[in-house]
Image (cartoon, rainbow, N blue to C red; front, side, top):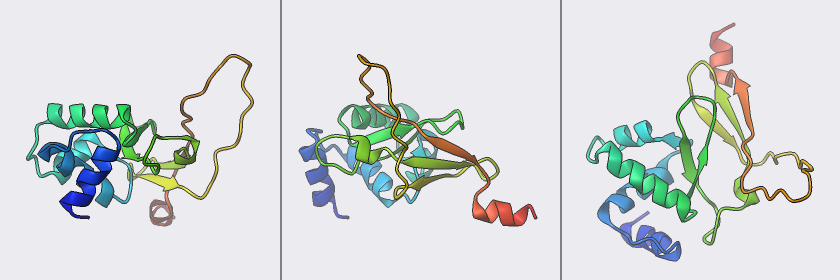
Length: 142
């Protein structure tokens, strides 16, 4: 994806396309799994300080460019929202956290079960994580 396409995405989300934001979004687009702040630091080859990456991720989360995932690894991970307007329940899907290799996988085609909650509560996001061993780690442990 070229810079203009990335700038268009940021503009659509009402985020000023600075060079750092373009770099971070490019890495998020290229990532095959949700990534943490530390992952991004490595992917960006330490060209940005951790505070700048954190501020960018915080802004992206507020503007629905990304949504955070709590996978139990004690480190928030981030992945892109599908919609150009806002993150919604279609962006909420099941994640699988491998307890051995520490990788988080998205099961985008597996819907989160609908849960009935008491009247008056308004859900904003759902975090559904399954923990265990991925196929590769499971095969190694046999």
